[in-house]
Image (spheres, rainbow, N blue to C red):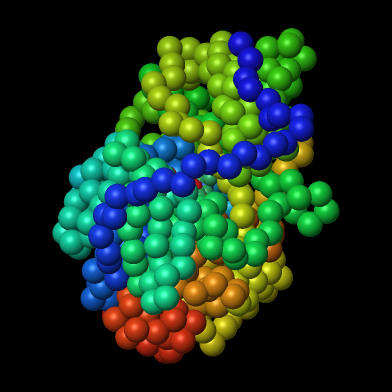
Length: 469
Ligand SMILES: Cc1cc2nc3c(=O)[nH]c(=O)nc-3n(C[C@H](O)[C@H](O)[C@H](O)COP(=O)(O)OP(=O)(O)OC[C@H]3O[C@@H](n4cnc5c(N)ncnc54)[C@H](O)[C@@H]3O)c2cc1C
């Protein structure tokens, strides 16, 4: 088996001009239906705008469903140290009692998920992470969008954006051929900043020293896992499991025997709301860029090969997995980091780690700096001061020098270190909601997003239950 490599000598050719179907106009157009896009669409609708949400896949949820990224990471600050009991053995270590720093749309979604048994309500016991079922997640999101009168178009990949005198026009590639949609404001929730980049916004990629981003990981679900047997093993080998990851000795033995060939020294997996099931986050493909189709292709080949190795390792060497098997892998490899659009402010790692506050805060985060090594083994984890949270200013959602476009989710403006914290799904949903509200106010007041008074955005966000200090 082999995959296509990029041409050695890049050569560009012209394409013939073409026509596109005009699919209509809206006040707020949200591109990308992941956590940020869901937050943006509902935030904008609640702020009184007409909203259209367009997504490239045939379902919603972004990484939560397409890449099987489970669970929602903790969105609580940590006040005091918890005691990890048996029930917490598949949960993150060092978690303490805390308060939520994200509210709004996230909680509306959570309520619906919990009501259906599709998620476990965040608590000290669960380390404030939220395991959820990805299939029911999709269903709940459909219902929320219908209830908020958000019109949705699936199977449509945004390929370009054009600036009109008083509007902005997005171009989509679809099975019906190319189509365009006009909007007063677009909220770019593509994770990759595709729209902002196409509009000419500047962006950074990767760490400053060599431009490498965090690695990609293909996540997968394994069933027929025997939790009791695994818990007995970790009780007998307490040095071999830290909450959600470990098994160092077994990994080393399998590596030495030539059964595992991974750039990581441990295995990481999470409980789900379904008994006998775990979500495994242990493949790691380094030195690949999520904005390169060549790298993405190579990453899929590599990650699927790694998944087969890990599943066999778990079955053959890890107590509790003897009868287990893979029921599902992500529709695509999970991409942690690509473009960080340069906005009117760039959040820094220092802002995150000193829990900095801003006058124009529109979202908050408390998740640690969490950098999976872009070029090898190891993960850097640095915590926000206990009991604290950092602010995300509205300026991080406004691309420098570009009109009528806001960014939300993992492509907002920040450095490599800050990104490793604000990229997680609850915070992405919060920046999405903030961008949606700002877009709605810009559209209804006929202003540029940067001219909307931040106090109006904050007022509307608070009215929607968002968590701001
Ligand atoms: C392996 C891995 C593990 C992770 N673990 C966790 C975890 O345990 N908990 C946690 O909270 N976070 C975790 N994260 C981080 C988190 O999943 C993402 O950072 C988060 O989903 C970002 O949300 P988003 O909405 O900005 O982007 P995404 O979730 O990537 O959503 C973007 C959406 O836009 C769509 N899209 C993209 N481009 C286009 C286009 N051109 N046109 C139309 N649609 C487009 C995509 O299909 C997708 O639906 C993990 C990430 C990875 C990769």
